[in-house]
Length: 69
Image: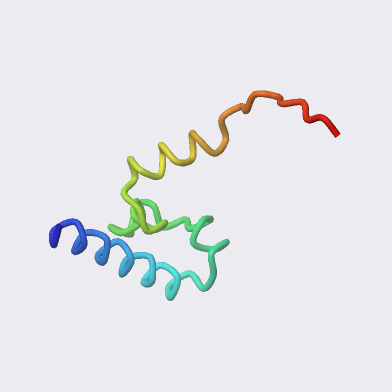
């Protein structure tokens, strides 16, 4: 588990750096330094593959549920 924890700490450090560089969450999301910043892919504090899965789940269509009131 120490390797997994070290990986999480590294991702958190990258996120902190991006927040310092950009200023706020919105600016991190809109960051245009894709070609010049080696940290750009990790700016959300997660691995790019993880982010894609979470984003896909978040924006996936949800089944309609009818509630009785």
